Image 1 (tube, one colour):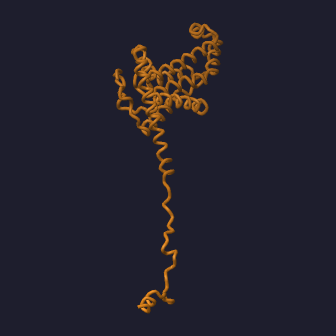
Image 2: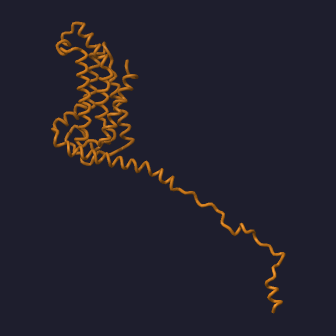
Image 3: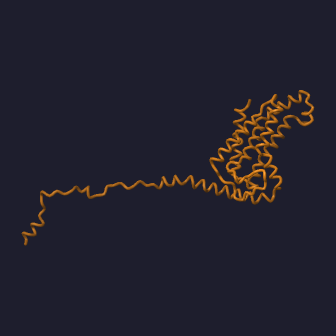
Length: 244
């Protein structure tokens, strides 16, 4: 029996064993994807919070301010910033004052029309759900909301008047020096004061019209803010590059 036991316990010197490393798992763990997932969801989350803030703020401004302001006045501001009326007015000014200075307003309005429509089609943001169309001249629910075209138009007009103030003053001085009685009757002030007053009224009109877009429920606050920024940038471009 002892011989049998010793026979089973004796190791075979010619037996080969696989290396120890083959029995161990040296595979590296899969890469951690938490950082990539977090970075990819940060931007949508931020935009979602921004849109929620914009929606809430706009609704509060709409509900608080609408009872305090005359609805007819808001509609009047809306009509005053219509593209057709502003473009026809700019062409009339160009026709009567072309021999003194050429305002880039008509070309700037055309640039604004094309750019704002392109951005609206690209972003495709819906208008506020509480937008009730009380103006039969427009169909708002069929249009996109971002950015506000009314805000961009009024701000391009105000900014161009501000940038063209010196040219307008020079034109008025030349008209007065030519013994133009009509100009003398229309503007009894000093030319500088008259132009500064007109520019101030234009800025007030632009601001009031932009605020009315939120109060009427036509746009969100960020729509109007973006439209105003686009209008100022377009005015700078038109003033420096579309002046003939």
